[in-house]
Length: 402
Image (cartoon, rainbow, N blue to C red):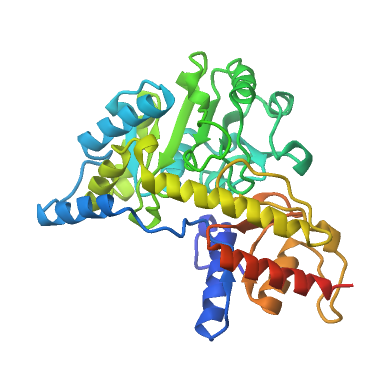
């Protein structure tokens, strides 16, 4: 409900659907219900010990003062080195800006490049915060719809058709939240070739799930020299290092974009936590090929993905593709629209999620929040036992719908 005492900016924003479902499930848990949460995008692993030790050392060494707005020089240098090591990308430390999580990194970029009325092309399904951040910048989001049959990936032809004189940016994630889709090198090159014909358009490449990839090595759209000056990479330590609460994200961008983000960030948060930055430095300095913690986490996610896909096959009316990354499945549940248990009728994905939550205490996220109202997002960042129990409950609840 609109509150006239608040700004239009805030009144026009929507609550994050993932955070809403997490809040509802926490409320039910507080009331004593046995809730299984498959809604939150957070690894269920703890931060590796060597990273925690680096944070403790930072505290003991009294690194507890203000930090440079764009991040400690040694961290920015390490991020530049990581981009070269992992993706063969050449960036200077002054092209890196460290922020309070990748979400702030995205907001910084969009607020720095988008004017009122500018258009931002967003493949759908998309991460829930993209449209809200564009809205904050008074831009206009232009959706490109995709389907489960194409693994929720856009084609170059679709991108070309969506471009207008007002287009300022194209934002996407690979691996993708919420679908788990991963773009191949050839697919990225084809999209880059389209956008390279329009020198005034930036590509915001959200690569936060870089290490949660079951297919091949990560491919970045910044690898193509003919488009690199138009690309802004967004990444961070939350997913690949199980460091969600540390709140460290970063961009790698053309120098004038990095400078603009430094100016903006300097006025509303300044630099990220000193302790978190030094923990992130230890994380980023670890080669992923040498990280037993990452290998363990990736193997676990791969096993869970295969498990949940097999279990979903046993539920009539649910259609899922095979995601190649992240830790989500995004099944089509529209076969249940119009069905009822005699008391509640399922008209959309939100009704579906609320029915499952209230009936059998399993928290999912409605697909409408991601731009596809026929689907739901299921996170398998939890134990196999929880996945088995949750899908059993879902199957039982759906069997009651007629």
